[in-house]
Image (cartoon, rainbow, N blue to C red):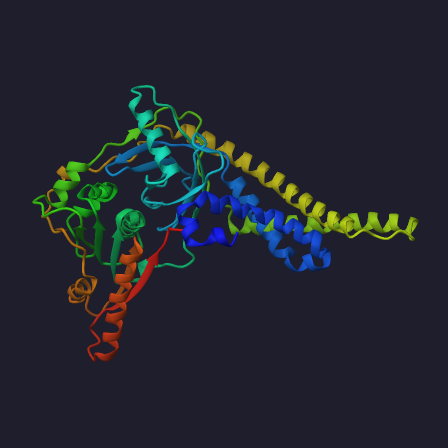
Length: 457
């Protein structure tokens, strides 16, 4: 298990890492049999809570829903949209675990959410870069389905989550610098939509200046900005300004603007029409229900353990001369654990089924809700403020030096998502600027706070 956790094995052979780690069940069972119940009680609370959490996560990913729409971008990138409970709220940079039964009944894969629950409360979207075995199978399957004219069938999908960061309040900053590399743009799309909804809502505190720096190998990846094209090309107001800098590293200098490239590589959304019995994504169990399930399972476990001890002590009195095998006590402990987990699972499944039936009726009534479409860039007539550079990587220390003049006396959040090289370069630039700020008497210089978003295991 330890060897399979090494980055060399884990990142190149994830299935090996994933399936070998299920041997923890065998390890715990042998630990109980070898060390005995007295030593096992020291680790039992952690094992009990872990097993309960694992079970509730499996239950919360049921029932399966269906993919509402698919959009295929250049560079083998797909966007999946599926229905969610209108009351389900999530924070930007959240992730969901996805399983598609048509590909595998066991494989779960995490992806960043690109949508915002405050912009669209009916659906949820993710973008997937198809470069591995499972994602390539997904890409080929979607391609076959979209090529079958008029015979496209809904694709079932199981979703677990969303799970958001414990603490990342980017709204508290006066200005934001978003740096993304490649498919690392996905959480930035969610952040930008969240800020736009805050601007139009009742929230008073949100970043007023946003600089989005995108580093990519091919100019075709600019098509990933399609979900936020209406934000990029909307005329900046006094309370909100978004500026985009794109660095294309593997292409020679071109004459096309960001608007022209987005029009050139834009793609249409393919909608699946047969959605008569689609369930919602209802999200994970909230903390109150989690506490209730934990309390119920704990009580059932103690009752079961007392029952077995009473049964054992009664039989022991009848035959006091016989010695007590340690495996009998271990078996009683294991049975109590299984009874508690199974009983809690039955309660959780019953409540889940009742909830899913209600959601299914609502989903049927809301079937005619329109699916968000690609914003028409041609309809927007604003001056081109965004910049695009070819043939080189950005020098982040120079970029921060340029931007600090526009962000005087402000608290600036620097959010990075992408390759490790990009993260290290931005972190070094922020650190250098922070050191320079300590030695300067001018208090009008901005303070850069670095945040890194990771989605690689």
